[in-house]
Length: 413
View 1 (tube, rainbow, N blue to C red):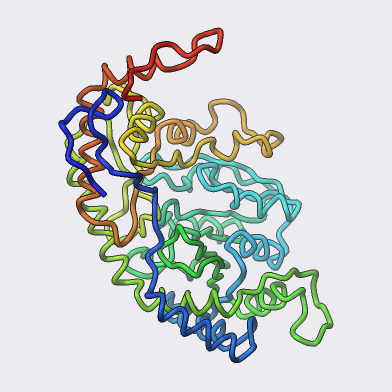
View 2 (view 1 turned 180 degrees about the horizontal axis):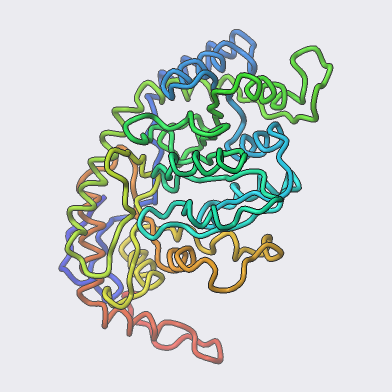
């Protein structure tokens, strides 16, 4: 809920823009009565998994994506892992470091070697030229990502993969509803894998969907999610339990029916953000190619501290004082995380990724977000920028000194 304020940032003693707290996102869900009715029917029928709702969800999702096969699984992470396994990948796999850790985890779980490459400075997606330069005789695949739902350069990556005989897999966790050159994503490469967790535009509670045009891969994936057998307990491969429940599928069906309406509202909030932030020095946003549509799983700005007057971390702290939650996606980038020390490229090899990891900040966004909340967030960012020098001094004085003792902190903190 927005609150009247006097123009000064809360960190300097002004009234916080938000009464209570504004979270980074909220799931946009169907009515409770509808969901309760679905659950009651499922319970009465006794079929909690491998039932008609999962089958219907797969069918309708495949029709929306324009692919022959959609395979429902328990999460996007397990979907990526199973795709790598069912494709029989070996050796090295090229991927961006500016992504969620699950993209890389799927490779390590399969004994593959992640080779991190830089992203483009405008779209924040994997740079095909950098990917091409990283190909060796040991490379078996490229794992691309639609970062924040912004479609990556699918034509360039498809051509590159074909030229070198590589598999192309897309981590489309953020992108159910995105469009590339006017067409829904989901059918490029060997497979595209979507997330249906509560932070996504299409929500099933938890779960994932794998879109593919390859019938053989789809068959193997259906077995792999069911321990590796086709229902006869004769395992053709070493699979896992990655089935989606009927309850998750029922929620997914409800949310799929409302997807376009929710996306339209979400994009209006994004346009309001962009229009209001447009003249603010030191703030830039991710470029979406003309003809493409991003779902904006997150609305993320890049903060140039030289022009803005504060760095990303100080802005995040000042917004927290306003009651506004933010996220530092993706910090640290995957190649700088402890689990990937053995695969870290030489210093300076990923300059765009490192810059984004240091400067990117995601602001609150959800499909049913009131315009007044967008306005309050933008007003807070603008006020913090206007008082940047004072904010920097206040935050600096509040940090521990060398002995670990906090210095004087204004009462407003």
